[in-house]
Image (cartoon, rainbow, N blue to C red; front, side, top):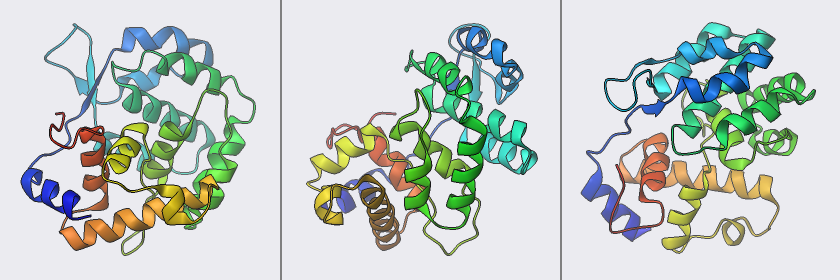
Length: 224
């Protein structure tokens, strides 16, 4: 991964900014499930459309710590993760979140996958997460948010399609590295390699994951 090391050295001063979202777009999908109060997360945005708000990883962590084990609180945290993951660019996010909130499996899935992640069983969490409208790019955001384990450990990381594009552009294949096409194994292999690379490059695994997201497969032109 020498090419990645070079990119990290060149762009190591960059940092992830909060995500802007539009409460008015989300409200019709959340109100039927009595989850519209989650739209108060974050802070008002000074740019963009009036009424937009900004939410960052710190906001998600604060909400996670506040809700604890409360089932309704876990649902609210999940909604916040979906909002953060969608921003204003994923127009399907509100609809998919509404579908997940209507899925009767939601409480059990959120509880069981949170327990698995906190126990370090990331492969088990991957196998257990089955909800309408929620794919890998988003449920791994849930994994990362609920993983509040103390270091040193290989905490869960997000495996977004944009991260995948960057890894593929760098010549890394999850199924080749894992020796199988079994997705839970490929995910845990990805997490292990990311922590290993980050440690060798002097950055955090969270930062490296975000940096690969920002590259989006374009190794010569990172996005902001």
